[in-house]
Amino acid sequence: DDYADDDDQYESKLKKETLALFFLATYGDGEPTDDGARFYKWFAEGGEKGEWLQNLQYGVFGLGNRQYEHFNKIGKEVDRLLADQGAKRVVPVGLGDDDQCIEDDFTAWKDLVWPELDRLLLDEDDVSVSTPYTAAIPEYRVVFYDDAILSNEANGWANANGHAIFDAQHPCRANVAVRRELHTPASDRSCTHLEFDISGTGLKYETGDHVGVYCENHVETVEEAERLLGLKSDTYFSIHSDNEDGSPISGSKLPPPFPPCTVRAALTRYADLLNSPKKSALLALAAHASNASEAERLRHLASPAGKDEYSQWVVASQRSLLEVMAEFPSATPPLGVFLASVAPRLQPRYYSISSSPKVAPFRIHVTCALVHDKMPTGRIHKGVCSTWMKNAVPQEGNHECSWAPIYVRQSNFKLPADPSVPIIMIGPGTGLAPFRGFLQERSALKEDGLKLGQATLFFGCRNRKMDYIYADELENFVETGAMSELVVAFSREGPTKEYVQHKMVERALDIWNVISQGGYIYVCGDAKGMARDVHRTLHTILQEQGGMSSSEAESMVKNLQTTGRYLRDVW
Image (cartoon, rainbow, N blue to C red; front, top):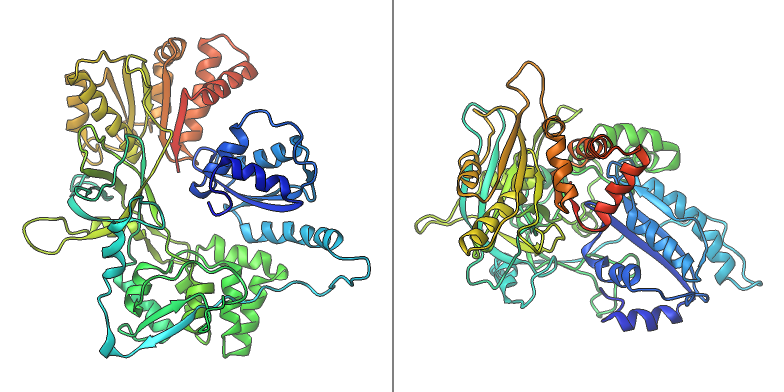
């Protein structure tokens, strides 16, 4: 991160601070984001420090999603630790909930912060500003070029392999080596197996890691954006976060500019066009709406008075940015405003890697279900990355293949260091992905002569004739001894729907025995539904098989989590 080069610098700099605001996001199973991981590890796990922050006054705003079990864990924990270490809380911790409207949560928290900052920072003679704070609308400086000086657009990504360390800011260009459909023709859904070729790049991964994939918007989406903005696709331009004299553009910190390219390339690679617009985007559109009533309506939707309408018309209806722009045709912001304040930067999509480097050192495998859903407005939402993967052209012969900028994000979702420790894996659907990597790794360890502990996989799908992905591989893992038992729940084959948690109940004693023997439990997949149901089932199994009370079972589950024996890779 930008604040400190090492742990000692964190301490020396934080000691000197008298006022600080912390903005901390939580993702996955209660984990910090990449840019906050080093600070959190130092601050939360760095041992007893005493009350060394008595000169610091602080506020914390957390960004999370209430659908996840560990809602805003990082923000809550840092808020508590700061107070424990002597710092004085200026305002209560803010808990942003992305499942509702996180902007409203932030506005409510911010309205508490301003008066406190006035109290702390203004002299007695200063007059507090009573007018509400309104943020400026950020805008890139845009330079347009003549057709005659077009350069090679691909250079921006072609040079991405020149970095010693690959991360979100410096991804690695990787070709698609293999793409195949995992569902049978009888299925009305789709799931893609895709392999990125990382040979010669220096990119490495470990079993259980995630891969971040920067994908592209579909051409139909991009053409619609060009039409709404009134821009020509072949217009070549560059964006800049400084003025012509080199001074920084005042206002909000802008995301780093991307390389010069055409409008078509920018909207394809860098602009998030399909998520619902934030309220700040509506205000930016309002500022550039030529129709007064449209501008007023946009401002109303973004205002406290329009909170319920925004919640219903934008959030609940899952209206995309392009759908909203189509409703307000007079709002045509300049390109610099659109890219800075209206369309967020297209973010990488993360996937649990479904291979092991012990078997595939130069390939990163991804298992991706196609997102193809009808929205409340009637729009068919096609997932940006899953659609790109389904249509990817693999590397065969000499023709052009698909490629994407990718990088590896480390995970704590790892097999036990001792391969003889028993494990239970629970992963229906694409939740199977990391366990395919686990089983490849166990297979390689077995070939090397290591003794393997018991390994049971609970997998679930709808029907063995439709979506039983990697069926032959799974059965082969059992035959070769990499896996002890494969338990499959087919939810659409019998008279009643049967899921992985039902199969867990049938094998409650086996699960209890594995836990009693010091074994590990792994869960991967949907956080909102499956992972919650599995968590409840595990609690019940501990209660019944261990003869415990509900609170004792919950305490044991917590202990399994804190000791790293109950690990979840959920989304």
